[in-house]
Image (tube, rainbow, N blue to C red; front, top):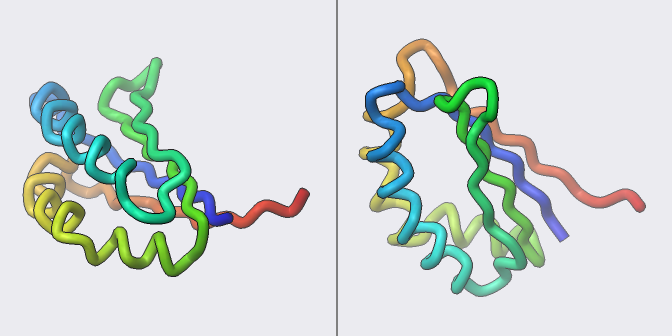
Length: 97
C-alpha cells in the first residue's frame, strides 16, 4: 500500500473554483484501478491550504493515476490557481506497522 500526502496553496480568489474543479476529479479518481482512498482536505486556519490524502494499492497504480487523462486534464487549471512562490509538496509513504 502507498499513501500520498500532497499539499498545495490555492490563491484566495480561486478557492471556490478549485473546489469545483476537484469535485468531479475526485469521483473519477476514486474509480481508478488500485485507488483505495482519495480525499481532499482544506486548512481550518488557512482555507488556501489544500491537502490531498490518497491511498493506492501499489506504486504502479499511483504512477498510472499521474499519467491518466483525468489527472493531466486538470494540471493547467490547478497550476493557474496555485499561489505564486509556492510549490506542490508531495510525500509518498509506505506503512511500517
